[in-house]
Image (cartoon, rainbow, N blue to C red; front, side):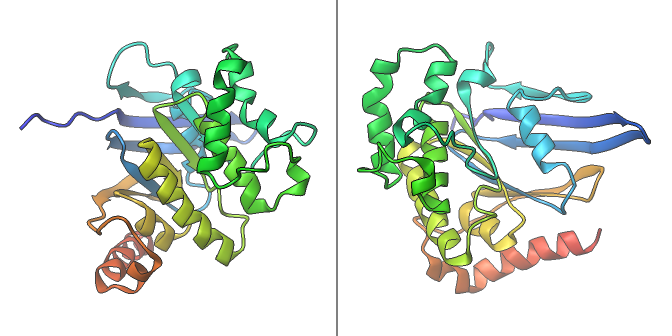
Length: 254
């Protein structure tokens, strides 16, 4: 059998910032692999550098040490990475369809060519019929769906998600988890997902990466061997509870 190769290999990544009070070490040493079409969640204490890590992967920030090795040369994060932030960050004066098409304009791609795809993506995220709505006419969950469609529009290989559901109420968050799994299965994208919710990480992921408190080091990256497609019922299974407890224990030892 042919050996599976990582799409991204994060190797001994470190990040320091120079502040008025001295040098702040945000990332101590983080290493893990991400494979094609995998859903990887990153969990760790607040302030441990999870968002910094995503920004480095996205090419929005340079690392201080270490490297990110990709599966091929000429990997361009601007075209091959989509980013879903903690807040939807939609432009209130642009309609939903125009918000989705924003990366196409920024990348100077053919907007007319991508218009049918934008419509298809809005259907995929459950927003068919809302193309001409403005963001302030949508709920928080609907705005995050627009943000996800926007991240997918230029067909990136990797989707980075920085606690995208953290501001939603518990019921909406559960619905969005199910929707995200459906969209991930249909789009076949590689997802790296940051969350503070251990149960959310276990529910969504193929693999969970656990980081220590700042300066971050990787405690462990381990597989989640639960059947797919996943439903909320799996959260009450003994195996799910074992995985969640494993993460809790890793974080308790800090």
